[in-house]
Image (cartoon, rainbow, N blue to C red; front, top):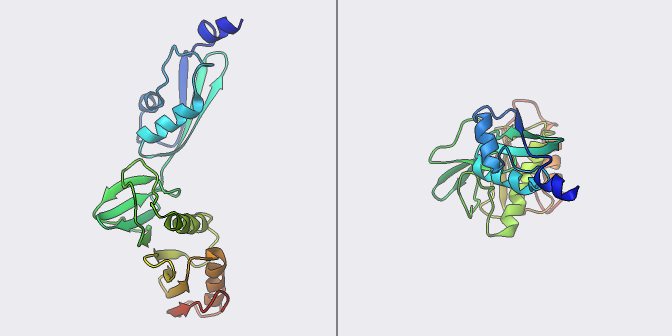
Length: 214
């Protein structure tokens, strides 16, 4: 029975693709996984197939592959949404919410959060952005998580992390927040938000963090 299952039975006869990555044809998505009709469903390594597709499809952020017995493979994809302009020495990396590089360009896209001062190690479309400096990667990920959660009353417009001990954040295009070092990012941004809320909607100015809680 085991031998039959791994050879004759449960061979893929159809591949169904769902999701919102309309920039790709279903055939392209299926091909990017490396899985073909006729492959045995039990022999397919779904995790490797998902990673292969993510590497090959620049505009796909998430992919889920499941078996539907007896002979159907289900592929669901989620497209990348341009979210960040990350400036580096040779231009701008446009990335998704999770930091997947969508485009390496000389010009930023309008309406995206701008991050400057990040030293990107492998600025290649289709890769997830990272730095050789683990601290910089940690700082970037912390800001991305905070922004992606969408709970900020006053949005972060830009972050200058050129100096890890003197990070500057533009809040709501009204306040420049000198938040000091990179520790306790969530707390500091939350504190700045509460300070801004005490001022009129047309107020502009500067905020400076002195120590960690003043």
